[in-house]
Image (cartoon, rainbow, N blue to C red; front, side, top):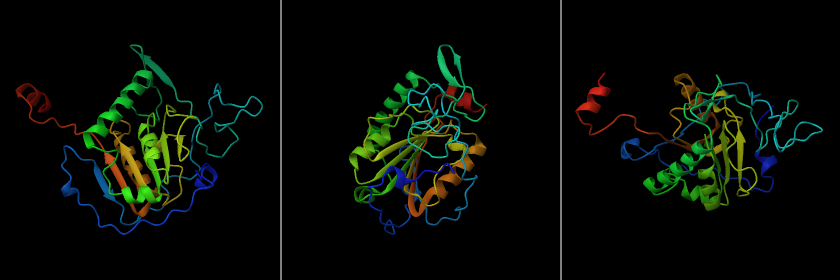
Length: 266
């Protein structure tokens, strides 16, 4: 079973205490233009796994710099390995358009490029959002983070959010997962880990694993059907009483002129 185990990765970590019973945060208090969606999971009615726990995590990269020439595996998950590690790799297909690299994989629907320029854009985006919101998160979990909880970043990209959060809250454990391994492999806080996997296929975690699940700017990463599946998976891995924070762009233009209004009226 290719399932993540906190005990194997963070053996010295102390067990976390259940989160206190907060009152649900009303979304009516969140201005739609400036605040992320924050929702507390009050119960876990979706505790049954959406997919088989033996997740199709992909094959190890044959030319991985971390591969073992004798076994074909090391930090990556090889063809005979069922153990999930923080440097496992997938081998998606790519195509090039006007010098930019894109996914060419029927299972990955990310429409933006996947190259060094995109990494730079994502890093800049992280700091812009951090400045715009005045913090890395909006959910009322500061006390929990300071006491020590388990946190998941879905679609972590190059991992800036995880790196910042893991540095700010050393008592908590942070996991980032993304379809591309653009995240740090070695130089990172000891309480952080990065996994490569297609989130649309399911999350490789047991039910009720995380106290706080964070997802940001993933609107163009999933189809409509995949969005429904991903949300169910996020609810499945979030503990009862845990928090889920979603941040997405508002694609509806506001204060438009006549030309823009006419364009979107078509």
